[in-house]
Length: 633
Image (cartoon, rainbow, N blue to C red; front, top):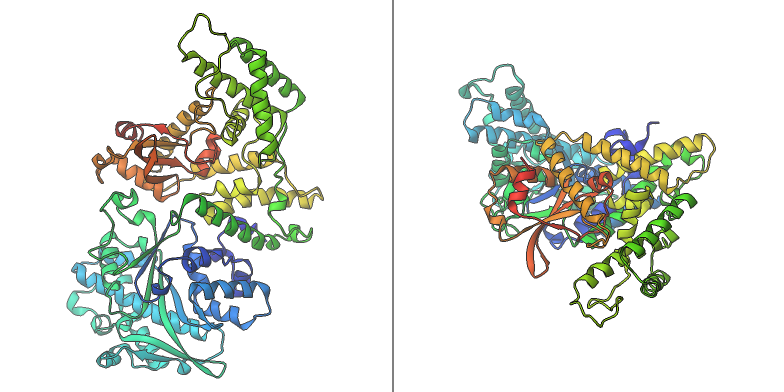
C-alpha cells in the first residue's frame, strides 16, 4: 500500500470502516464543540473558512449521517467510542442517538459552468440552487439508507408550518416521492448545463423551471432507530463553495441566509474566496453580502480561531492523534509494532563534533579579546548562563549552547557599555544600566545562530513537526509522510526505527523547499519572492552577534496608522491576500509593541524551515507600507 501520509484520507480510503479507523475526532472538538455558537450551528447558515488542507472535507465527511450511524453501530470499538464522544460534544448526538441528518455536497467546477450560460444572473443562480437542493436531498436519502438499517419508505419528512402548499413541488412527504422529484429536477437542470448548446430560456425543461424549495419546506426528518422514532435536524454541507464564481457565491449565500429556513446549511470555503480587505482583517470590511454576522450567519475559522498559543497547542494534540491513527496503515511499521509516531522522531538535543566545538571555543575567546571583556565579567556572564540552564525546562543544555549564549551576552555587554558616559576615574569594566539576562530567548537565539554557523540541527522532534505545519492538517501529513518514508526504509532494512535530529532536519528542509516550489495558486511567484525577501532580512537580523531580538525575527510589522492606505485593489493587498489564504504568511492586526500598534505579517512554518528561522512568535522587523509595496511588485 502507498504511504497513506502522502494522500488525503478522503481521497485514498475506499470504504467507511477504513476511513473511521484513521480519522481523528480532534477537529470536531476544536472547531465545533468549543465554538461559542455551538447551539446555533444547525439552524443558522454557517461559513467554515480555512486554508487548503485545513481539514474542511474530512470534517464534512465524518459528520455525514452514514458515518455517524456506522460509528454508533459498533460501540465496542475504542476508536468509535472516541468519535462518538466528539460527535456528541459537537451536537450531532443526543443521549447516544443521532440528532442530525447531514450530507456533504461537493461544489465542483460543474456548478460554476452554469454562470457561463446566456441567461439572466437570477435565472442562472436559481438553476444552480435548485440543482444543489436536489442533490442534497438525494444525498440525504442515500445516507439514511446506506447502512441498510431502513428502507426509503421508512423515511418521513416533516414540513414547516404553513408550508403545506409547497409539498407538491418537492414530491410530497414520503421518501419515494421526494426522491423521484429530486431525480427529475437533477436530470432536467443537468441537461441544461451539460449540453453542447444551451436551450433558449423559453425552451428550458419544465422540471428545471418549476418551483422547487425543499430547504424551505422541510423542517425535520423522522426515522426508526432500534424501535424508537427519532426526529433529526437536516443539514447540508456545501464543500468547496469557493469554486463558484464570486457573484454566484454571493447570490448563493444570500439565498441560504434566509432566517426562516430551518434546513441546516454549512458552506465550507477557502480563505481566498473572501475579498482582500476581509482577508487582511481591515476594520469594517467583512464579506457579509448584506447580512449581519452572528445575527444572520456564523463564521467558523479553522485558523486564527483562538489565541496563537492555544491554537498551536490544540493542533499539536490533533496532529499527533492523526499521525498515530495513520501509522498502522504502513505495513512495515505495523510489523515492527510502531504505534507512537512521536517516539519515532528523536527529540534528543544534537551535539557538535569535537572539532566544531573547538572552533567555537576559539571564536568565543576571540570575541572576549576583541570586545575587551575582563575575565571577571566573563565569569559573571558564564554564571548567569549556568544558573539559567540549571533551572531551564529545555533539555538542550549542550556545551555549544552555553558558549554561543556567552558570545551573545558578551556582545550585548559591549554595546551597553559603549553607551555609558565616559568617566576618567571609572573602571574599564563597569556595570551597565540594563543588567544582562540569560533566558530562553537568548538560548533559542544561540541555537538559531549555531544552525547557520555550524549546521547544528534546529528543527526536529514532534513539537517542531507540528509547529511547522501552520495548524494545517494536510501540510502536517506531507511533512510526516516524508519522515515516514525514511522510517519505512529503515524498517525494511531491519534498522532502528528512530531517526535522529540531523536526518529529520534534512528531510524536512527538502520537503519544505518542495512545498514552496510547488505553490501554484494565483500570484504564487510574487508570494515566493515576498517571503524570500522577508526571510533573508530576518536571517540577517537573527545572526547579529548580540541577537537583539533574542530568538530572532520571523516577521515584519507595518504601523497600523499606515494600513488604511492599503486599498483592496492595491497589488500589495492582492499578493498579501493570496499569501495569507494559502498559508505562506499569517497576519495579526493591532499587535501592541513598544507603545505602538502594528500589523504583524508573520512567516509560516514552511518558510521558516527553508530560511532556518525560529518558530517562536513575536520577533519582527519594523517596516512601513512603502517597503511592503516594494517587496510585492
